[in-house]
Length: 126
Image (cartoon, rainbow, N blue to C red; front, side, top):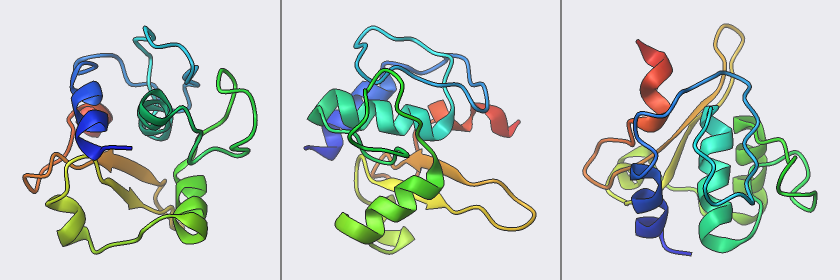
């Protein structure tokens, strides 16, 4: 799996609607939202690798698999590579997580490799 492929695919989805809690069918290549941040990133990974990641059950049907930032944390701890935020910011396609805390919900974005992030998952921030 190539981070640049993830970033490039994500960039084709810019401007599509963000809806907290929306479920994205990860096996539909022409799906155009609405998107939830974790659903969006899991969709991108599935489209590039044909493997579920960051979902409640990574062996379930891609059309109904439920993605969540907390599941991304679990999968990163079990099988992923965890790097500093600074390294992720320099890595195209890296997933950057803010894990849920008492007063905040979790969030996940894709790094553009230029110390920024994909704008797709930032639409709800305004």
